[in-house]
Length: 476
Image (cartoon, rainbow, N blue to C red; front, side, top):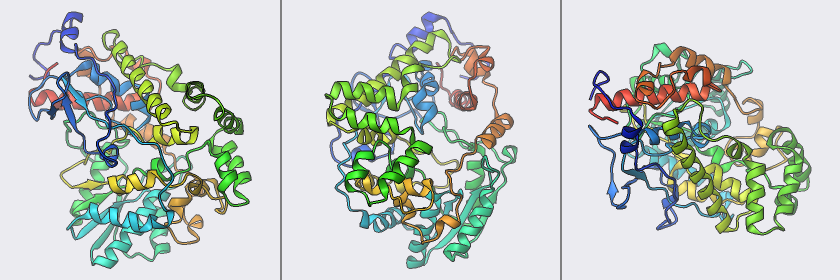
């Protein structure tokens, strides 16, 4: 069915099409690696039989698409609910982080993950941003390429951060520091320079700069690369989670506790939250869990759904969001997790990886299931070290340890933020969501209700997905 064909958008029709309102449930994991597998798996709603999204045709669900406008989807890398009626995403319940993994194995484990991502390909591209995670991935991938005789390529979206630094300049300096002479390609940050990525049956895209992502893939292919590696996942799996004051005091180095509390005040939240976390450990699971959610995730309790959504789908999106919060709280409470462990669980699960922008294979070695399972169980206190010269490196000491001494003088001493570039990109690449309005998903005055650029980006992504789905014969 095309966009010019008639659709019935009455409340009754919406009810018929979306009688299987989306819900969020974790399924018990059959083995220890299942929670860490990022390849989407689906089942039929009601029967539980394995299923797959339709390649053509099919019925999409407006209520499911509305979940893209909830707080979990807007704030994390996530395909929230499958956009197809009658389809559920299988997500396996996360474990409690046990702290039994050995940090000294980190480099070898990541090298093995990189080798699995490369497979038998001979020419490897690494997406480099000038940040710590992609720098460590580049260094580890270079070691693999040297050892195995493969060719290496670096490719960078040259998006200035909020302090005006250009990633291309930083990565050039990084390559010199690492002694690498591989080609380095720059993606022109003008969005109109590149087409939109290919349509994806799993749902609207959630990458921040999708056209530039496609540009990165096209440049890599043009240079002969056979796979593109990304640094996604290091923040979730390797960074110090917060609420670790007591643990750092017990097991950290002598200077770590004071450095940790200073950093908590500057970037990880006020020290009072750390004290509350210590006191909460003396309470029962129910009381501790309630206090944790109000302290760690206040927005999840304050905001429900999006004002862009029509009344017919808004409440169903809110119900999905409530399901997500209850399930997230349940798995942490049943595991008896501390606040630091709960934060590790909730920032890591559920998670997805951005699908490729073109036919070029792409992979995120940090999210390799074997490596992710290992990294998730690394000791929490080992994720922080007061020995590094700035907060960014101290909170990500495991990633920093993958790089040579002196890396702090090469990379920016802060987590790179590109909010201004992000806003500019979506001013230029925004897609008018005419179908989303016509089909009854978004309000006609959606633009005046937008709270931030994330909602503008999501409206554009949903619109492009709807156009692609209907072009392939799908209908509501």
